[in-house]
Image (cartoon, rainbow, N blue to C red; front, side, top):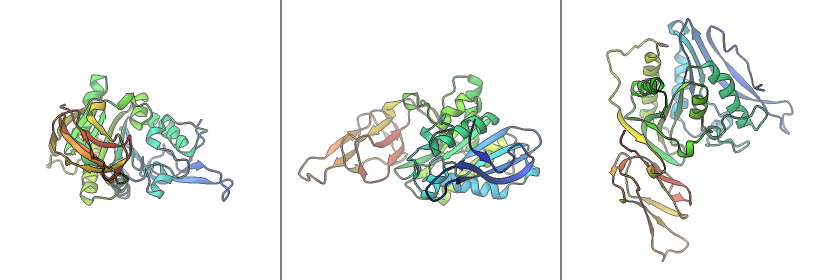
Length: 331
């Protein structure tokens, strides 16, 4: 049983906002708790939709879009329930870091969590064992954070069930990002929110918007419009822009390790390809330079698979094992 307690009634009607009280005993606060903001809006019959921002603390567009959403909600216009976590890993959000400064925890590698574990594990446990169990749909808003820059897109694990796959593709289309597709997670990664949603039988969509540890006003607006289109598609909110169709989505797939380019030695990374550029298998992707031995020849890395550049490493320094690029496969 979770040890996190909500200060609001998650099942109540109308609009409620408060905190999830995450127990955290420290030298400065023996019986303290970490306040994770939560907003619930409910009215009438309809699906429960879980909206998550701040899964990683340095990914900002989704956090801002969800803050704007909750400030604008009118429960009388709802048909169903929205559960909104704009800052899911609150310690990481307040630090502006991918992982929690308290325990080093990456929330999106902590599921299914542990009710008696570290703070990040306890958050993961609450989301999976309490919030997802009450939800039919989950929208998880990300960006590239400090280390990556993404082309704006929506994606999800490739569901094996045809009906769920069709519903997922409909959500991706409704969101209306420039690109959208279904992916196969590396090594079948079971520790993400997408894996948790799959275990709980919840339709799920992930959105990636920009990155580089900064905020794009244009991508915040894209997120706001996309969220409202998804909620209208689900019938939770009325479609106030029915006359304006969602933008066309360019489909793609991610099949496995060949869609990624990794750094094999520490050094300064010089990227050769740009976001949205079409690349070929074997094409040089970039060069690694070695400041400690400047007379050494640069090491060139190549793309294993032809496709479109979906993301790139943002900082100049790269270390062995860092992701440098992700490219798409045909849908």
